[in-house]
Image 1: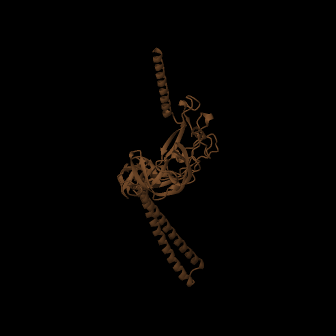
Image 2 (image 1 turned 60 degrees about the vertical axis):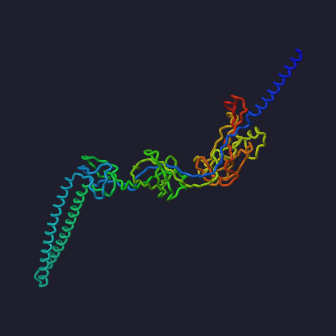
Image 3 (image 1 turned 135 degrees about the vertical axis):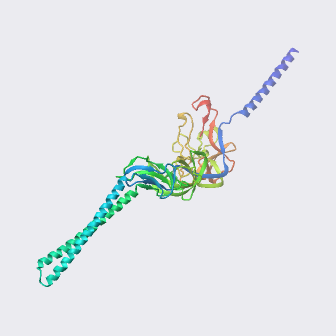
Length: 456
């Protein structure tokens, strides 16, 4: 009996061990990690907008610097900062005492010149009468020829003296007019309607206009109409055109976007540290006077936009698998897939004109960061070719049936994070690979902490 019980217990234990082993095998099979783990992002359908960003400075449409052509001491100021002014309004006055004295002297000189003209004309008339008498007497042979010649010379001298006197009077009149103008210039008038945005002088200050006219005030003609002068990079200026809408923000109102329109793109280049930019001028309506001259504007131009297009993440365009991923899956290596350490692999060098250009955040321009010998990560260069235009041939990898599948496509607009698919077998909802790794590497091994080896 004891042997039978022992046999039954042994058989039961064996059955339990067999069942537990089978259950463990099933559990391990169900929970075993796949040989390669893929990170994916879905392709979707929607609107895509290509934008160009730049910074600029707000200013009035017309800004007038008011100066003075004469030197003197500021006697009185009639306006201050932010004062509204009208054309012809008195805004400042220079001490007129010296100019009033100069005017009186010019008047005296003019009166003296008038007297000299009267005197010279009288002498001319007297010389003329004398010449007529000598001429009559010469016809009768009563005077010598020499006396006649002398009277004729005296007449011509008198006529010259009269002309010189009249010239001196004209000079005196011009000096009198200049003295009056100088006196009038002591009254500084506003040349335009507007608002004073700068005042550079105070009462009692002496201004000297010997070499150039000093600036006393700066007047903005109309602050309700302003402009933004932006510096647009040469790689982006070809995307802009006159009449294009633009939006911008300023630090004073961070939660508000202001609207404007491109008036012109100036052809004069501005080069700073070998960086070439062009001035795109934007007209802005400032009816509520929130914007002020000199504010820094962060401008966004909408260069192109499309609705209801298939969009792929730029990370998927940058992804390029390494051969190890196919070895881990037991698949043959597709043609064109090269090891990460092979620098002959084409990358998106890009010219910045579209999604192929890494310089502007588009899906191009990756870099080798080392192969398995440099930390154990297989990092391939991003992209599949140059970004030579808005429609560029590229490659993405979709996860279909648990396996990566290569898809060729042509891309169009990019907003920096997603890119339009112009042509290719990519559908809405497709899971596109953006990263891959294998979990079977030993922990703490050469492939990084946690035994995770990245395959991309």
